[in-house]
Image (cartoon, one colour):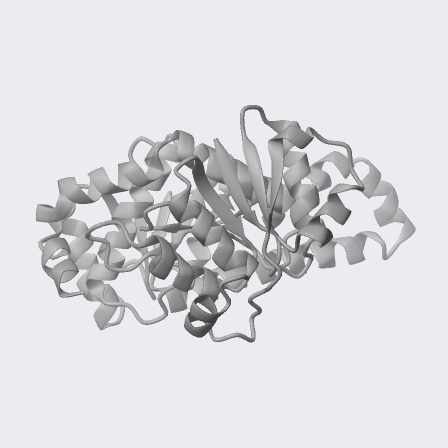
Length: 346
């Protein structure tokens, strides 16, 4: 298996991408990496570490797409950028199973559609990060920002793709699906969520109804469905709350000698909590609905997050996630009553 890495575009490039790639190589077998970006800069960074050089190759791409670039124009114009060259490798080399990038989300989404293409019948690809939940659980949030303006049929497909993701990659036999709304009652929500609620009830999935954002990490759901605007607000709220709680806890402990002494007896518990709430341990968010495996890592990813994102790609490739989504959508086309019809309009 080969995985391509867009080395530039993130806040900590190229150090985080190179170190994370080397850590991944040390943790796995039978996987090779192609690092894409300015060759001299990458090789300078590689020279700082010891690793199996036979499992890492470098593809030269001197240009970079930044967050200030207009995504569509940049994908078309910056053909020598690390991101575009990574897409080209993924598209043209069948031995490459997937890619990761911590660059501009808009550019990654645009390139995914223009360069790789959507799975037949998919109306819109969606970002689907996996978050920690109570009792050592995991919950998939779809969509978290790829589609800020969505139609009901988009969210219906999001649910199907996320169910397939949780089944094939995480082994959840019958994922519990919740729809983000302003109350748990069936009649609550805006026009969009009310229509989606009815559509999800008609699908042969384990739809458990509306849910409130405060219950996102309750462990009561395996999939959370939202349009990209609401999902992104929910995700950023969770991240911010986690950072605030950890920070306030640290300040309270350091505030007195007795608190410091007591914390010594809870050091292991605090370390476990911090690790569980650290988004770097969860890698990135896959773009579901694309013909190849693409994971968008956080722009501020550290080496641990890059390594985790590479593990995600490996796991999804081994589970044949793309093939699973194709089969899931084909099987449930009649159940949605809209997939084929709407797909033909695109």
